Image (cartoon, rainbow, N blue to C red; front, side):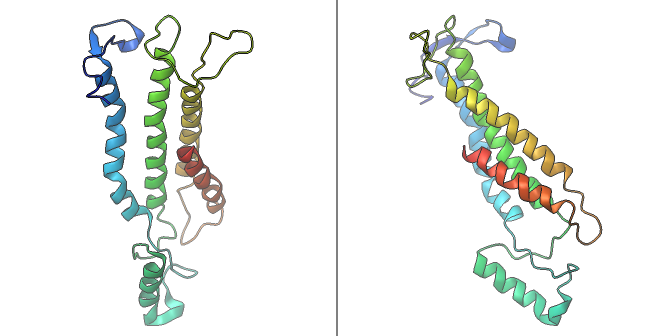
Length: 194
């Protein structure tokens, strides 16, 4: 779409103030840029985050003797995860995944925010085809999707911050921080999915 609108002019508004003309195609390309970067990172995020966790009570697989590593490898294969040493207290994979999800939502929220601004009556550069109507002002087309994206982004940032706060696990296993991860990681996925 950026090529389609390469000649569609609008005014740039750095810091909310009118500036020089740009094309709508440039704005579309700027919206796409972080999403393309996130897509390029996805394989590395999968490699770091989607790894088997099999370590026994203390993270050493000792109860299985020399077979611990073999069992972990077979488990990884069965679950289609990357084989990995036990990571009871290494929350870097969870951290990386939560950050990626939050940045994905933020990239979409940037589009929502720009859309909300550009669809204001005094700007009227774009208009939602199915915006939220108004019971008292039928001429309105509220940018509800853009608003929702901004709200979801604020939630995703809070979930990521909570996961970051829960990443300091004590000694070889920490039962105090797991429940925080169990609550916030699914919500991070829900925010990104929404």
